[in-house]
Length: 149
Image 1 (tube, rainbow, N blue to C red):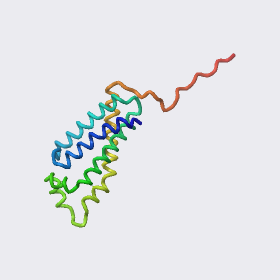
Image 2: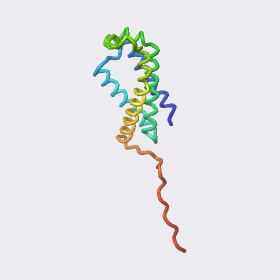
Image 3: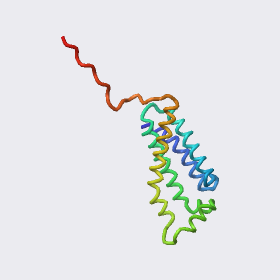
Image 4: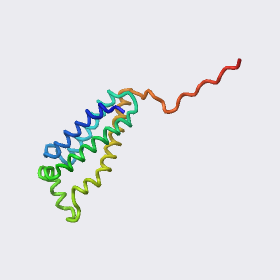
């Protein structure tokens, strides 16, 4: 596991989460496009600086990034709703018996898993585009039979 690069690249997710909290990151289709471009860029950097186990490393990066983003958005939930009018409108349509922060906390594992899977696939794809292959094999190659004496 390449924890140094996972930590460095997860900081990008922290920055994106803070931009979302303060209403700088657009919502809707444009936000999704920006998120995909960000994920592809992170995967390129990660695949370039990692030599093996691309999906596992990418999955871990995506899971850590999803966890960081979810925690930041839950911690600053009120600020995020104040700065994002579309989100405020969606929250007003929720039943009053549902606490939005609890709803975010319950849905966070799904968000983290999807983020990890996508980042893992992006990283594996970028490694393939860069012509990198994992140096380790899951099963060792068969040995040749001993020659008769």
